[in-house]
Image (tube, rainbow, N blue to C red; front, side):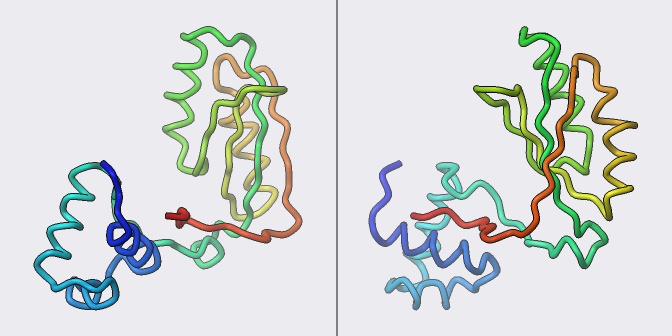
Length: 152
């Protein structure tokens, strides 16, 4: 789907406020409500808008610690990677998982209550996934930028 400037304005506004009423959205992007709603529906149907979510403050729900774990797998064959992906998908503490090219095979972002909570999670779950050879954890000292919005 080719996006024009109005589509991009719609996406920018919706990324800031996914609960905005259509009439207010239309006003902000310079359309009348009916064509605005039609464009939003087209963006949804085309998969440009994947879903709507609430951004939750991790500290307010007892998950104030974010860590990054670099995962080394024993092998990189299709079965090992598929098994790893299936098992990681079951772990709610893992909020992102990326297969990597380079020095390690996967990078996961984990949320935990505190360092002890993470240590327990790593030893009882992450390290026990069949095919995981090693886990190296990185602890960020400060978050300088964390956006859910994409530049459009």
